[in-house]
Length: 304
Image 1 (spheres, helix red, strand yellow):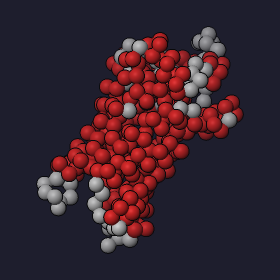
Image 2 (tube, helix red, strand yellow):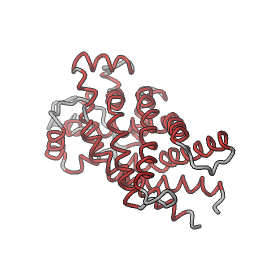
Image 3 (cartoon, helix red, strand yellow):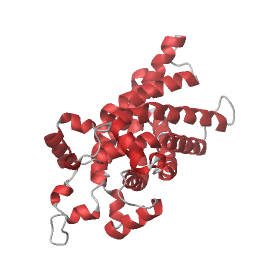
Image 4 (cartoon, helix red, strand yellow):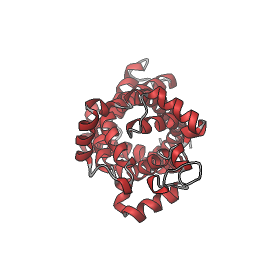
């Protein structure tokens, strides 16, 4: 039997592998989702995809990829390591045995705590990713003879580290957590609607109560859980994206409530579901890849 200590390390390592895989798979649609939610004049998902490809080529879909890929080790280690530690602790406190299978209430509590903890690292990572993704073709040309646009309108970031330093210089350390409140509203219930459906679907897809789920079942359960989680989290995700894409020199929103009221006033209730179809489509392959890579990696690491 593997010790608790190695099990915790297994969760961290497997979370890194699963997270890295899911970022590569889901980043192109994540870029489309961010552009749609920030309200930059795209008619719909198809128009956004065509516009990005026409103006920025295929590379436009991978803007901001290096930063989430580089930081995915810490973030997904935190998410999966924290979730499994919290689940074990809850089982130990409730039943006196951390190895006892967790019930749905236990999984829900552990996942909501995970959502709360994940914002500490996830908010700065997401902010930098979105700021880099929002550097459109026009911004790239800003300040050149090819474009009359002033560089002040589009603060150019040379990369993730320059983006972080620019945000801290202009907005201070709290600037890295812009949109953090909306992220809490998204991730606390969002992780509950991520891990709970995954556990339910895995149980439903098992051949019998004692067997382990087949890799195909893990893939399907993870994909369905991801689609459910991301679609239900879309309203909070829209608010978070708008706050994080809000340029410091041309700020439109004073906070979460102001963003909600202004968005509703100018664009109606439908604005909070902008990008829902992208989230549903993107959520499936990302989460399917995430959970499958995580579970297979965990099985591999536990052999040592």
